[in-house]
Amino acid sequence: MQQIVTITDQGQITIPASMRRAMSLDQYNKALVKIEDRKLLIEPIVDLLSLGGMLIDKSKKQKNIDKIIELEEKIISKMIR
Image 1 (cartoon, rainbow, N blue to C red):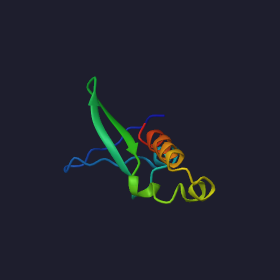
Image 2 (image 1 turned 30 degrees about the horizontal axis):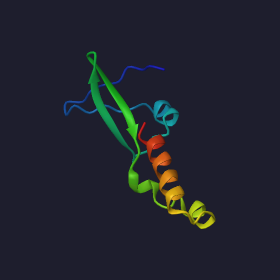
Image 3 (image 1 turned 135 degrees about the horizontal axis):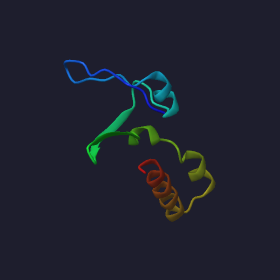
Image 4 (image 1 turned 90 degrees about the vertical axis):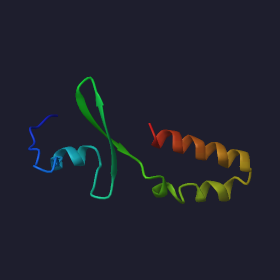
């Protein structure tokens, strides 16, 4: 998917709606912008605060703290890839 966009005099661009939908981005998401091989890359990043409460059901079922920590690490590693 590609599309030509305009860069404003303040250096801003608008990401087309179809691309935002394809990447599940909305107005409150964060993104990492970097240069690689003279190209700008935009990668969505996960706000770690949005992960709050993801393990509540798991922690009730499994009292073992080592297992809970392992599950947290797996979830965080998936989210930051």
